[in-house]
Image (tube, rainbow, N blue to C red; front, side, top):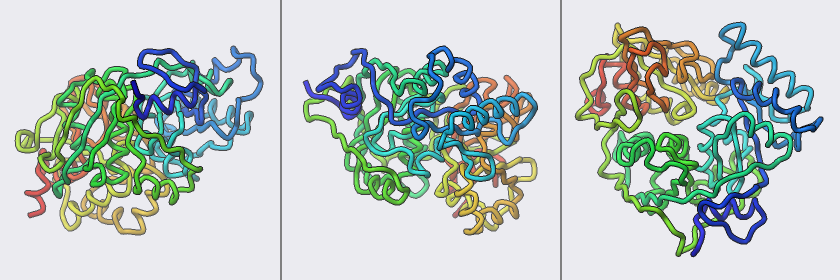
Length: 422
């Protein structure tokens, strides 16, 4: 039996001719990632591996993004621990606030640190984002991060796979966020548990790289070990533009085994919203519109890229945010922030009544800059809507695309962008 794309990458990194689903392997790593929440724990565990130095100072990335700029003394202490470790170990890829900062899963592809065929671990569950680049990437715990930093290796159970065949072309207001919410709605938050979601089909050519980042990012919301896309011309162009190292292109064997095959026709999709309190609780905009809201958040590692801000600005331009709504826009990296400034998007947002933030995860994980009070509702482009995720346990989070979020900010209720822009 042949191997899937993910299995081929893992086999190469384990120096094996083949691997099979369920097999335990020890794999070499191309990159180890940590943030200001998870790295301090890893730093505390690092001495237990009896190593004075990390395995490769160029293959570790440390990104302060969750509670930064520091929201309180404890957040400052977390960042200081990571910063001091980065300095002591001469970590090449430490990203400081205000200089070259950003939300980690937007920042690493932007800086060319990940390429096709890589094996990447990160002490953050949305590390699976880099599957958009044809890499195997997955989230791990802080102890495994410490092991990865010390040895350059970690263990995996080789995942089985689900094939997702994408066909057709997107309607105007449909994006990668709608596709992935639709998929999670189909299979549930445990529908791909410890499996690889492997995307294929002619329709992938109609997905932008930003669409693919969003989809791969939320593979974990279906319980997946990783999500991964084929390396096509669009991917190769992205890697070249961002200075990534030479890609290693893997393709699934014709006789690769899949647990199931799912087909999604992009042309049939509608803007999709995940209702509280799980990403699988999805409804189309036709079922969702009209629910009054208190807050909108446009940003995060899922949807804070320049194309996300562009679509939001297109809808918001010349309009005003509903008076009772707080609209928060968070560009995902400093580079994106500057590009949005140059293109006039930030002015558009400010004139409409939005708050524009420096790059940060901010309210996504209930950090700060957008915490919800009891009974409040938010439409957000983030990736999770669990109970209490963004504030009070009796608040509600509705996950949506930047287009739906922007339209909802204008109307003060969950809204169809097509109706706002007609």
